[in-house]
Image 1 (cartoon, rainbow, N blue to C red):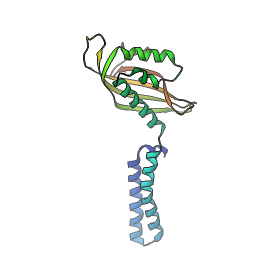
Image 2: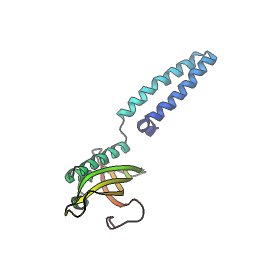
Image 3: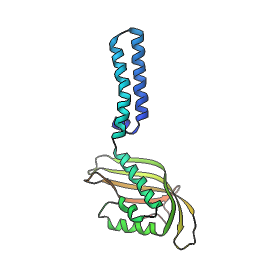
Image 4: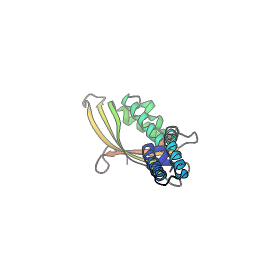
Length: 186
C-alpha cells in the first residue's frame, strides 16, 4: 500500500475516484445518506493522497534521484562529485570508478530505463539492487574517439547508511545484450 500511495499517485487517484463514483451512484439509487458520506470522504481523499505522495519520498525514489544526480555529474565531467554516490570507506571502488571515468570526456550521460529496483528482503542495513540501462556520448582523452554513443547495462548494489542516504557498495557494467566484456569488472 505504501508503494501505491507514494509512488503511483495517479493510480491511487483513479482507484479512489472509482470507489467514490460507485458510492455516489449508490446514494443516487438508494437515497441513503451513509453512501453519500462515504462517496464524499473518498472524493476528499483524492487530493489528500496526492499531497501525501508528493511529501513521502520512498527508498526507491531516493535511489532514483541519487542515480540521476550522478548521471548529471558524469555529464558535467565532475568525477569527484560522481563518485560521491559510492559508500564512504570503499576507497578501492572509488579509485576504480574515478579511473574508469577519467579515461573519457562525456558530452551526454543519462539513464535510459530502470529495468528493476529490488529491495533485498531481510537485509540489515537495508540493501537494494538496481539494474538499469544508460546512454553516454564519449570522447577519449587521447582524441582518437570523438562523440561516440555508448549504451550500457549497469547493475548497482546499494546500502542505506545510518544517516539515511543510499550509497553504492558494488557495481558492474555490461553490454546491453550478452555477457560481460572488456569493460566489465570480473
